[in-house]
Length: 230
Ligand SMILES: N[C@@H](CCC(=O)N[C@@H](CS)C(=O)NCC(=O)O)C(=O)O
View: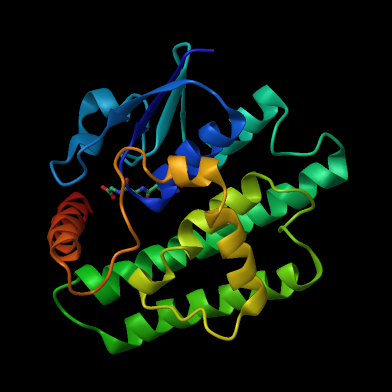
C-alpha cells in the first residue's frame, strides 16, 4: 500500500502516526497548516469532508475520521486488533469511548479553558469535570487489565494520544494510579515516541512557555474560523 498522511501536531493526528509507526508501515507526511485554514480548502475537503485532520490516502482511497482510519489500518494489516468477534468488539468499544467521550470533552475543555477570549466558568467546569469523570472510567478498566481491551491495541493508542495532554486541558490525573501506569508504559514505547514526533516534535504544553503562547494564538484563530463557518 502507498500511504499518505495529512496531519498536524494534534492528538487526533498523532493517533494515526503512532498506529502507523507501531505497524511498521511506510508513509508520506503532508503537514496541514490549521492556523492558515488549509483544512478548509476544497482540495482538502475532497479527502476529509469535515475539514479537519487527520486524513489518510491509501492508493487513492481517502479516509477521514481518526477512529475510522485506525480501524482501516488494523483491518488491512491484521495488527493491533484481535481477529475474533468479541475481542474485536472490546477494542471497538474503547475506541468509540475515546471518539465520542474523551476526544470531544477534552477538545471542548481546551476551547473554553485555553482559547475562548471570554472565560465562562460553568463551561470550563463542565468539560473539565466530564473529562475527569471519563478518566476515572479508564482508571477502573485499567485496574484489572494491563491495556484497555486485551493486548495493546488501537483503542490504547486513541485514548493515550488524548490522555497524555490532560495538563493542557486542565484535567487532573492525580489519584488515578492505573491510568498513570498505563500512560507511562505507552510513553515508553519507541513507536509511540516516533508517532508523536510527526509532523514535528512537540512536548505536552506547559502554561507559560513561548511555544504554548504561540500555540494558543493559532488555536484561537481556529476557533474564530470555526465561528465564521457556523
Ligand atoms: N472526530 C475527528 C476530529 C478531528 C479534529 O477535531 N481535528 C482537529 C485537530 S485535533 C482539527 O482538524 N481542527 C481544525 C479545525 O477545527 O478547523 C477525528 O477524530 O478525526
